[in-house]
Length: 237
Image (cartoon, rainbow, N blue to C red; front, side):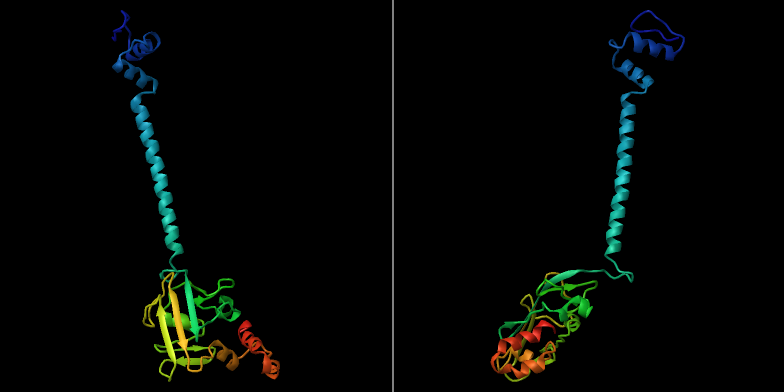
């Protein structure tokens, strides 16, 4: 039979004793008795700690599941159906002929026209796009119909070859010579510099190649308008 340590009362069972402590001696209780009363009431420190631990554990488990799901999503989005990694990289392409820079801001080199992995988009100037897979330098230039070899490049049907007399063709990436099977990386600057003996540059391509359908009229009035002839060769190629 429990007896109260704070008065002369005695009780038939533990429950009645704890009720007595809680109601009559709450402000007098020592540490152990406070713990017993708190446990009886269901508000004990251990119970709080356990509840807090369970809450933290549950939150951590949920967070872990969300992180794994996010990682899985990113991985799945970055891998094609055949298991190959997908890319969407960008860089610069500079093709210079006798000091003149070729303009890729033309419909003929846009993705809508070419449909290749390596291409350009409207409003991006000479910024190339490469997606969904990675391609080599040779494959990239094939995609935009400017095939290259170790010593040559063909631009709109005109081939420039370093082996021809007084013709120079230099092909580099970020200023360094690379092999044709070099796989392009994000941020690469492809640089192709052509020098010809005549020094006619881009004008020579315009004069030799097809224009936008007004060639006969342009040729008939060509005697005094070289600039118009040059421009027409690039507006709609």
